Length: 344
Image (cartoon, rainbow, N blue to C red; front, side, top):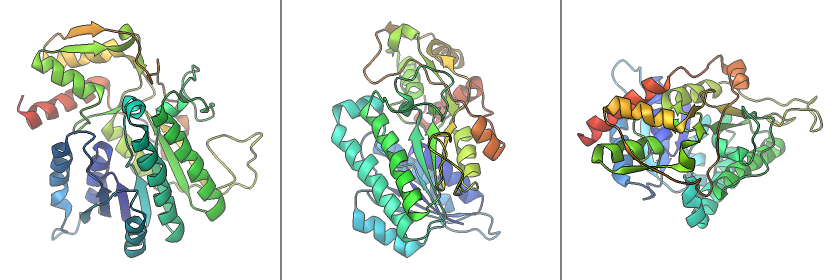
C-alpha cells in the first residue's frame, strides 16, 4: 500500500517508516525538521531511511521518499494528498512536550490543531482508506482511576499539550461522522527506545549519568509510568492499520463506549499495561550503565501527572498483540544505541 507518515524524521515516525518499508509498502514521509530538539538527530534518522529510497532487485522493500513540509502549509498539504493518492495515513507529527506547552502555547495551536485539520481535510478530499493518528496518555489528566481505560472521562487535562490531543480526537470524530472517514486514535504511553528524543527521561538520565551530572527526580521519586518500548508501539500501529473502524448503527451515546461511535471511529490505548516506579526505571539505567546517579529530589512539576497505566484489552482484542519488551530489555537496547551513536 501507499502510506503517508507525518513526522517521519521523528522518533516514532522513523521506526514506523522503517518497518513499513521493510514490509514492502511505499511511504512518503513529511516533517518540518523544526528545532524543538537537535535537528542533527532528525537528519541522522533520515539518513538511516535512505536505504529504502530505491527498490532493490528482489523487490522486497518499499520505496521511501521524504518531503520537507509543515502541516500548517495548507496548499502544500492539499497538493500532496491530491498528487500522491495515499491509501492510508499515519499522522504522528505534532509539537511534542508537556512542559514546553506551558512556555510556548502558540506552537501547539499551529502544529497540533491546525496541522491536524489539514490532514483531516486531505483525507476527506482524497478518499483515504484509514487515518491513524497519535493521541496521548496525557489526555487522562486528573483521572486517578487505574488502569486508564478508553471508557474513562478525559475532560480534565492538566497541560495544553494534553488538551490539543483531546481536541484531535474530537476533530477526528466529527470528520468520521460527517464524511465517513475511518479514523483511529492511539493514546501512546511513555514511549522510549533507540533514536529517542533528547527531551525525554531515558535520554536525559542516560546523558547526565554518563556526563557525571545530577539528575532531577520529580515528586521525590513517587511517580509511576507505563514505559512502552518503541518496537511494541510500532507493532501496535502496523496491526491496527489493518483494522478499519466501521459504522455501528446500534451505538448510542448514553450506553456505548466513548472509544467507539455510530461513525467509523475508534480510540485505543497503546501501552505496556504494567507501570513501574520512576526510581525503578532509574535503577534499570544505573544497572545497565554500571554507574550510580547523583540525584536531586524535587516536587512535582507543572503539567506532570502522578501515574500512567494503560488498560490494553481492547487493543489486544482488535489486533491479538500485547507489548513484549521488558523494561530491562528496552533500557539495554536504548543505552546500546546511545553509546554507539554518541561514542560514549
